[in-house]
Amino acid sequence: MSLRKRPITSEGHKKLKEELDRLVRVERPSVIKEIEIALGHGDLSENAEYTYGKEKQALIETRIRDLQDRLAACEIIDIDNRPDTDRIVFGSSVTIEDLDTSQQKVYRLLGQDEADISRGVISVDSPLGRALIGKEVDDVVEVKTPNGLREYEVLEIS
Image (cartoon, rainbow, N blue to C red; front, top):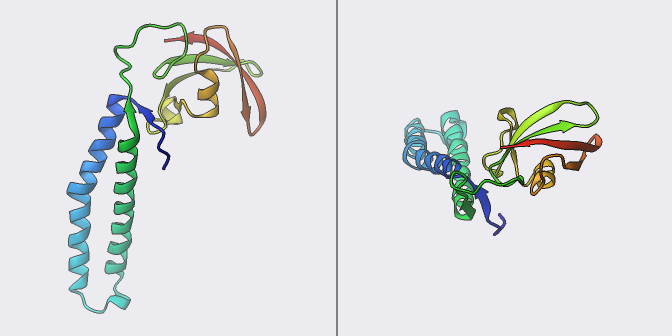
């Protein structure tokens, strides 16, 4: 993982910490107990419960390490107390219009750990997010996509 700081809201940071806490306090002990029970069934070479338990344990441990790395690299950005700005910044919601299709979309720019396109949240590190940062209303941004170059106009910032 990169040593670069990862911007995140306090709410996003809290969610990551809660997931880590759940994995360490609930999931890890539960899978250890499952493995202990499976060990009691005898022959490990044909013990599906034991194999499944060990695989599940490996996934949990990998996720725990990933969350620990992410949390160590987080830089919490207070978006509630930032001054109003006419420019797009971390935490902004922005309405853009695709200049080819006239389709309008609303996105909120947050960190990569909070990005969820189904909720309209994109990462500031995504190609569109990087293109939008620092822009103002009526600015046009060009974004390289798999389908070619797209142009978007910034309609509103909130």
